[in-house]
Length: 518
Image (tube, one colour):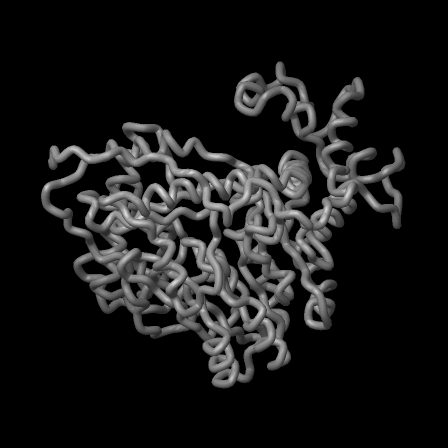
């Protein structure tokens, strides 16, 4: 290890461009956004002296399930009501009240207003479930779609299950950092011209590293071709709620948006939203989305998850000063990194991509090349020695996510970075991201074929039956029907062997064997 003394990383003041409060003249928050109709309903219901003779079986009593009470608290158990409960899902004590607005409907209306959607659905099986809904909607429109290759694995799963044929558009890839980003309007226009049978466009923005695509321009291209634009905005659920954040996709013309509210907006894990845009394309989708949501949503939706979306929306929208502080703390980290000799702020790399028109200020990407440590090792040591968990690491980078209303202890994070060991010789950095393999079969054809396990040494050249994704970020490096390459096999095996490595979809966690088409 190098013993050369170096000045510690220190927090620096936020730049004037990142105010702690919204700028003067920002629109006032409507009074109704301070309401939490669904939360109020379940809380009020919990004050009643019920004798519960219904599901869930714990009946809201800690003594009936003490381990669960220790896990989530007695308060959470008390509001764990089933669906269709009088006084929560209805505004009267009648078990059915046709035509009446429910507290949940009102909560969804407030969310639609907050994000500028024409309609919003709360979903309790995560943005992955939202992508399953959206791929089913896309398949109902037609058998073909223009699809960004670097979508989340749940999109590939959904497309596979419903028989949707994708025409892939390959987004920009920073092989140095190991980051996939977005696509441009020109790429989408070319794909639609080459594949006129496509009935939708489906892409991701922002990317895992925070690159924001030109959604407005892409929406115009899609609409000019007569098809709707679907955007997986899982990593941008906080967008559009503060003047210093990028504008969200639904306000830029997207027709259907998947929003993972637990990621940036702060609701409970596995809660998410679907947002419907404006205009004729979005309006034509409304009934279809409603029916598909109903078919995918659990018939025993969690009151806790639904309530957390209602509460997170109010907190995010009505406390802009907290969002400003979160952004300012992220900027203090970036400023300290920019002033350091060892680490480098990777934000300029993200913004330099041809598809990026903006960047999520709450994603802090730190380049560890030249720092005497890999991103993966930094990730591991921060967890083990400092109890600091970051969102993602690659061989070349460390990525941190700051919640939209969560001010960070900047000094603690910077001190931990400073304490990481520095090798005298730069460590070897394995391949950051392999190129997609050649396509030999369709998604569904490969997925539903007879399969066998091939040893890793013999798997190159075989056709994968699985979507294999280094996780996070969960972008499939190999798709069903793609030929496994030597590079992809080496990358996935190295990922599985790393301290924080995990490959979603693998038949063998160590990837000593791969599931291939027989």
